[in-house]
Image (cartoon, rainbow, N blue to C red; front, top):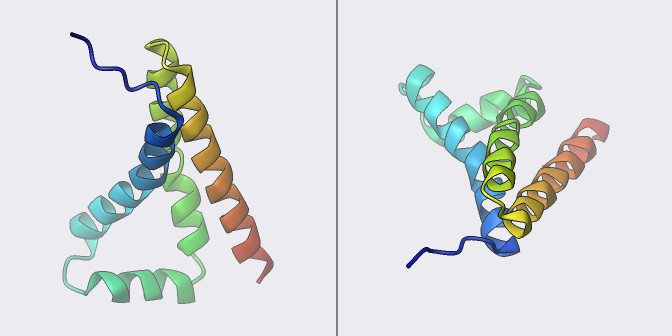
Length: 96
């Protein structure tokens, strides 16, 4: 029996979580000496938070293509929706 991951909500969750997994991995690799909240605050106050999230959202491109190549179009739509949501958030933060 083959599992069917062709679900918009699964793609949305994957698209929302993947950038944060990358941010956490970056934190653990480079900034383990400080707390995670302090790392996020430093990124925000140094005005690199939006850039960091934008770059980490690029991982969604890989997830999107994996879903497309495996003919899971609904899940790919969810990843695309999550990427648009990140784009709106980054744009709003840049305006502040």
